[in-house]
Length: 454
Figure 1: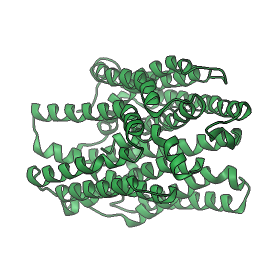
Figure 2 (figure 1 turned 180 degrees about the vertical axis):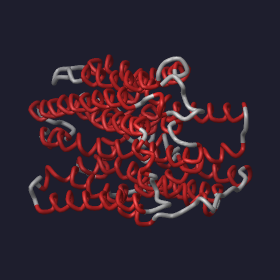
Figure 3 (figure 1 turned 60 degrees about the horizontal axis):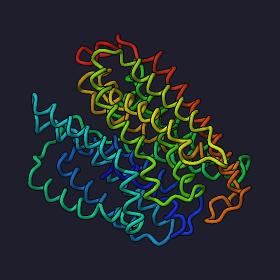
Figure 4 (figure 1 turned 120 degrees about the vertical axis):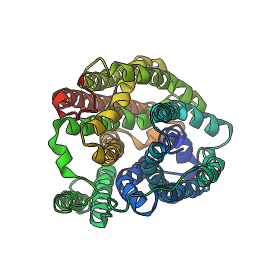
């Protein structure tokens, strides 16, 4: 549910925009509120699970996610939907922080490998079917059903969790960090708000400059608190290993470029080309299917090919994909995106498979949970800042009338110009990530149980 709700929402955004009379910045927040909830709460959720029980926290997370989904489904204005999406993200963070730990305690040996394989397949399937599922539900029922469908699934998950899961905890190692949580959440919120509102309010306005100053101060305070706090959210010593830094850079780069781009590609397919949500979901299928099949191939290659080569090649292919898609013009058909979708699908598969293992294989086993949480945090921060940052560039180019159902030729041309520019920016971000991955992910930084061919 939580991974599906990252991708399923994109194709419904134009319908949400029309139904709730939402602005472009509202649409950005519909995605970013969820990403921020995940990014800022996953590490705290892991600590709470250690203190009070992983089963208990998982059930609470599912209930919170399900209730928030119901609230999203009945939202009658954009602000209500955005707030509900933020709560949904917090529920998702709790589920994400506890799920792997619960699997680890239940399965051992070959069974654990099978369980983790099914977990990985579920992730791949969720990402792959998200756009199509969103298109089907939005076209045949309503955009509200992309959220309401979570209610019966969530109810079933709660029943199964109560009956089947065993409780476990680790109170000796579970420590809360309220200062870290507040400073990280506040700093990221101020940064995203400044990026989204900058064009409308003016980049030199007191409001935007104040937000940016607050963001810098709070994020610096977060880093300082982690440096002095013995049991903080983030162990800063992990960043002494270049390979660990390379893993976080890779997670941020692919999220801030290709994954953040899905929002704008969806708006292009529906607002400019006039495709329905279902037709849009079908157009994304080549990318989803290719990435789904490329991921297991990359997993097998990771035992034979240096990990840094897979990560760097994957990011480089994403850069090439966005460069190919930047050929879009006012007279283009959707097929102009197809080569980029195929190349990007291969790139995504090459990155996703080895990235998670790289993040945890560069630290000691007792730090694996924190390392995984940090990696997931960088993924979500990448999506949130990527959507906001690319949106700032995009909004500065686009005539607001381009979002209207029957926009004129000039407005549509401005939309395409803005899309062209951010595709090139995304390509540069991915290319820089590829270079850093190749330089930073070194074999000597992996622990004995990690990959040996990096």
